[in-house]
Image 1 (cartoon, helix red, strand yellow):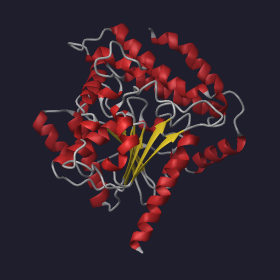
Image 2 (cartoon, rainbow, N blue to C red):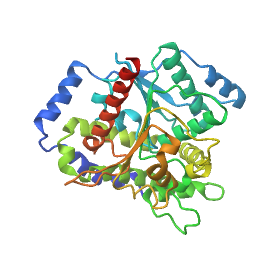
Image 3 (spheres, rainbow, N blue to C red):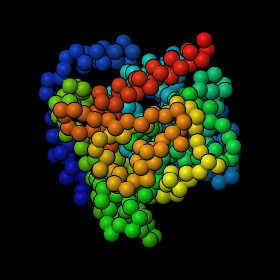
Image 4 (cartoon, one colour):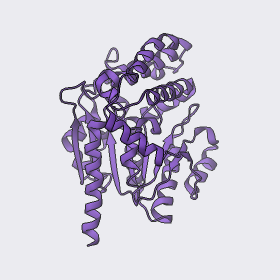
Length: 370
């Protein structure tokens, strides 16, 4: 399907923003932006030891690395954000930003469009956490969404296997996708989810994809993005017309920028991750002792299969993996159902859980210091 055929539906999404917004909520956010505008800039790393080692060992250039952006703030708890396949982190947490920046600086991992090296991105994460925790004395919270949660889980597992510590203050996993089996059940004749249909061509023998298949993948990701906007009334109460237009442009640009090789390398990265039930072992678990919040949407069916290993183990045995964890299903009573990783369109439903997590984190540290 040509991307141009998607434009009418994107225009319909934009039209939602032309309706009157809820004045108080929008005034509060736009006023905050006026006095404290977001200033997202490229992060200049002060620790690069792990990255240099990986580049030297594997002969990698900068194309395979994530672009790390930072929004500096005074708080004591920085947050590292790893988004899903799309959109980039700044768009994904756009409506959570006002709460997150009250805790501290925000660091966004934007994945490369043309290539993807798991080892290099893990090295970047190691270096950034060392910089924050050891150099600046501010252990971060990691907030990871969908595919980003899979990256974090694999990073934790590898660190655990080599006996390394992970000095993080807390962990938030939103709609985690941690293995290919979450999207494509083994032995299934055809994918049962939208995302499964998008990635299946990249997993077939040879992994060769044609132009039409790439466009089809882009169309599916756009459809998933639009699914979160089904509750038009909620969207009109959250975004101004300018914000809607800006976000649509940013998401569309991100989807179009991912090349065939970039898409294939991301899918192959996920394919290499073990299902979490495959390493349910006292020798490896728990993965992390930091306080952990796991959030699933009430309607994950566009992405996760009913047999998804991740949702099974995290909803039934999350404390085996994260002893100080809680797991919740995020719902939207009286409105459109919360979709997979819908932090933008259902931010009001996700935010209370995330705010409580940060408050409890701060209270726990205050009690410990007292």
